[in-house]
Image 1 (tube, rainbow, N blue to C red):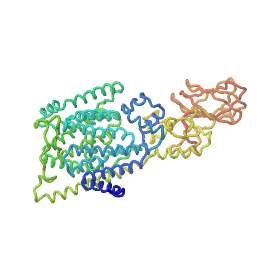
Image 2 (tube, rainbow, N blue to C red; image 1 turned 120 degrees about the vertical axis):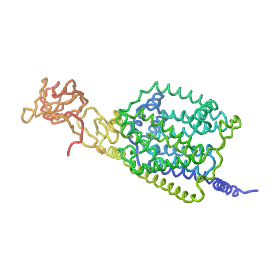
Image 3 (cartoon, rainbow, N blue to C red; image 1 turned 90 degrees about the vertical axis):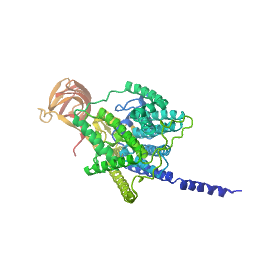
Image 4 (cartoon, rainbow, N blue to C red; image 1 turned 30 degrees about the horizontal axis):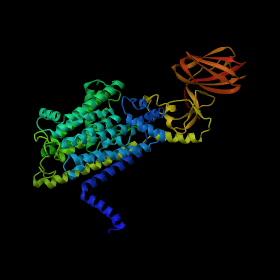
Length: 629
């Protein structure tokens, strides 16, 4: 009888045996682990940015309700993302590490599900590691694994793409209806986080046409529709239901390019600067974009090298495998859909000049590119339907085995070609390492992190009576386009210790551009010097004195500072155009800050109560700013 010690040592032996018997699987899992850890390290160097703060503020201001979850953000429907953000904000507060953890988990799930798809869809081969490596390490997906506002949309969509394709492949291979349930749930998962996931529907259809239906285009499409109509029924119902729900809540964001040249520049930028270089380890150079993710800016030589490598891979695989051509046409079709969607929503706007150079807009393309690379290089697995056997002409079996990747190459050239392929793979790998490292350097530059850290330190040591007038945070923290969520009162909503904001006070403080607390003054228009020497303007009870400004103020929400010398306590009123504000007057030399809404080139000051004589030569109307030392 075996002892307890024997059973303990048997488990590692079985594990070791599995690792030795499935070296491809072991290598794949190691690649996934490296990818997750590497991307987590890159992400952890950075911090929250731009849209992250708006979404966190909205979560902090709301209860967990259906209304909040279904609220659109920049026309994006993302209830899943809002749910995660609300939970983190409610139970952790304003912190970055929970989002890094969530993105790392998403990256791991994506890698594991994609490995499972490859092993189901393709023939057993060590070459499976090529498409897996493309998915895991392509720089096109860096934003999705580092910037939360991107990852919360894109990672679930990528996972849903993989799950949906896997479900459809399983249905084609086995005919079991349970795969239809998985297909529907996969699409719903993607739509729960990102409305762009609706592209999964045409992707699944086109992939089935390209990979599992023989004949010309018309025959292949008809075979696909007729043979697997339950899939299309499920997807059509989901698409119509989601489309009706989304369109009833959203505003049209369709735009028209201002010129043919604008559209051409967008396409050349998208393919030449982003997609093609990104698929071969580029773009190698990045253009900083403030606290947000950098924009692709590849050197011209790198772009041409990328085109050459992609063209060579397409030509070589098409010559070797008959399904490769269809696979690359599938990728081209998906790229066309993504380009069309981007052109329809981004061109004709202030950001059209860089729309084609933003990798996050094409992160989902990497999933399709990796699948197509696998089909082209490895070949499809055999279809083994038992409950619904396919007709040979309709669902092709696996392609006949080929003698490895170098099958078509004559024997005398194989060694040289093999060396070239290894060198290309090494170059692409080194390029990926370089690109990722440079991206990490750019991502690590976060003005908002320094600003928040400084504010926390300053607030911890500030006197309890320190108060502020509400004002925007610096543009490099939250851009003014995000107004009103760039206001300090909203930006700091998720803080543990928040600044206190007031509408009037005797002594105001202000946060400077670095987050330091400074004594406040007002920068803007001031009254011209008064006629009374040693007094300026003399205002007595019941009398109104007009004071011209050195420059007019347009109608807006302003802050006023008045410095005065009063003979007694009382109350005064200041008028600026249609705006009126009342403030208390205290005996002696004092100052008062208060808000007013109005505009004009003159102010009127009236003492409305008390036996008061008031002198002032200091009235400023504008915005709070640090007082010069």
